[in-house]
Image (cartoon, rainbow, N blue to C red; front, side, top):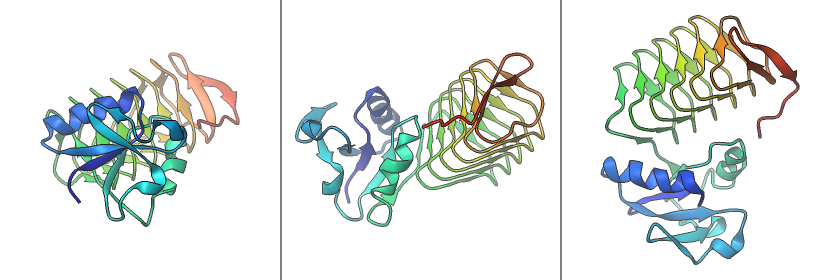
Length: 207
């Protein structure tokens, strides 16, 4: 198939076009799964198609920064391929792996021997240390810094400018607030904020 299909039609989808253009990857169009009226329109001079109309075997990447993207991706799994989108200004050192469908925006640095899961979104200027393990469907917002040898659980969202010191375990479905400084392990499904970060809310749903 010629060109990448971007899942989503909001502002982040437009940014993904710019990322793809800088990486020399042609964009075939956009995919919508909520507002059927958008199908048949154009965005960034490219067609918007309905999720059921994505060609079999097409190459896709998801441009949503919320957990609604997990459902979007599940609608296409087994029918399409999910590619990686990495801006050329980012640095990914050797012996680091990126799972399918992962997108890395401008100016990110990922140290050696890190493991990045499937459908992770690493926003601009993020720093990820050596031997870090980032779970599937994690979102890391601009300027966040995750030190080495740590682990971030599936579906967690790390806010803009957050700092996570080395060797910590961040649970599944957690939310790290913007600017938080995390100095101890974080359980599943909690919101932490502040410096040092403390639990502000339990049993959260980041979708």
